[in-house]
Length: 414
Image (cartoon, rainbow, N blue to C red; front, side):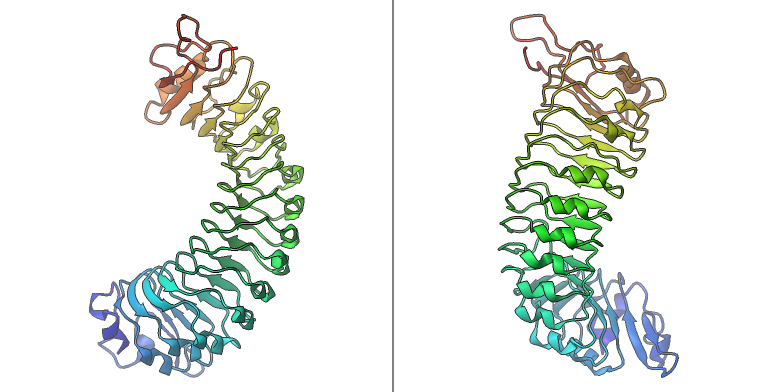
């Protein structure tokens, strides 16, 4: 029944499904060595289409159903959730419709650990009864029609390791008790309609590695407690309404790799980051002040440094060109002064974009940039500087050799 309902003829691999009567010999079916009964159905990325039959719930020995990245449609059979030993369901990236949290789901409260249903067309709010799934480790509901608020009861799921609910229409606020999720490794609430503040309690999520809260309407400041999350690897909070300064404690997070705070109204200075794995910084379109810390360029992994359109002052750090993997350097739209340091031979060999315009820099665009443009014409595609004469004059803030700069601006007149 399953084979025909899910378009088995067109599967990428349908070995054994028609040619043998032993289910344990069918592709994707895993059987118990002790009982010989099917325990797992793993048919990910196998061009399944059509629907899942209700009869799948009659195979009481099944513990895992994994059919992500297929073309399945219709409702997920409720009978699956009444399987007495069901531990994991992974239905991500299909076209399932119907209830996101059917009543039958809570029949699996004694066994279910992994509920992955993201990237479908399921609908329904997160019920208070979510706390009944006490063993739950993964709750993945991104890219569905969720809506509603995140209930406080969700913070009772102390075994939860990942909560992924991006682009799902969630509103309300992040529950203040979010810090109760002491085993959480990954939190993705990006691209929703969340308001209110980032709870201070996130600082107690000591195992958290990745936090994505960008694309909401969050207000207030970034809690100082967030810099206590020593394992934090990625923190994305761009496109919100955040104010205040970047907590100085972030400079001491040695696992921090990707950090984005673009498009907020943050003030104060950029902390002197010291993480040896720091790779990506995007703080554009804020109101950050003071100098660019030279310590940022000491990371051997730094690839992207974007601080455009702030109120930064001082000179360009002399060591910027020593970052061996740097590809993008966006310093435009600030109040930087002094000469543009010339990259030495052998430096910036991976550079792709350098944006220096709309500053108050002095002197010519260094020849070292022009040499890099000549050596890597298909890689180094953007060199933008204040190399356009001011209106009504021949004065140029940062003259650039012919054919070197890709775009010239007038810059700020002092």
